[in-house]
Image 1 (cartoon, one colour):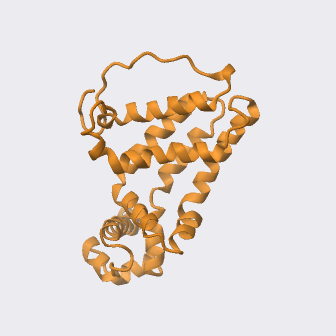
Image 2 (cartoon, one colour):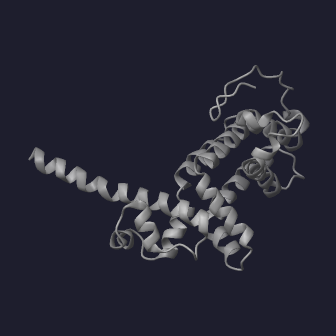
Image 3 (cartoon, one colour):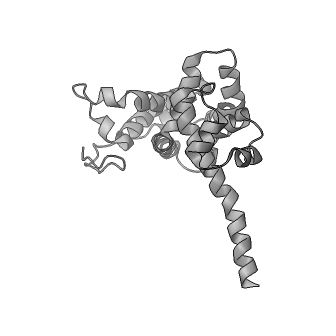
Length: 234
């Protein structure tokens, strides 16, 4: 009986491990070459998984491609649930969301570059595909949470919540793309500490988002901290 149980557990874990290798290899290759230039054979070679096994998990290259684009959704789900906790102060939720979103982007850089490739390709299919299968549901929840804050009177009624959500997300995409260049600009220090950057963006948004009765007091400058990514003190 114990031997059968052990075999069962091993069998159950194997597909998940293979799926992970397939997704990681697909993300790297698609980001480097684009969808059309990558074959299932390429992904099989890079992942160490047979073509037959790849098609066991994904019915087509298109299905694998979409799975790669959606592969960070579980982390995004947790982040959104925290943001939707309306009992917590909005300022704290904005900072948490910004920090976790940016950290996720750097942790899954291949997938972010892949999405950037899709956006820059400017094809008639890329926009609707990314909207329908990757961004729309999560973006809609972020907008809905901000709209809820409007109804409570904490956020300005004349504010466009979709614009606020776009600014919050867009600031992180900008840093992801431009950090290595910004690092050399005079007076730019936030590139070495992503928490300082996202906290600053949240503070700037808050002073435009909130009604006068709910604006937080100006915070004192933070003491130097060690960034999780570079280990550089700022």
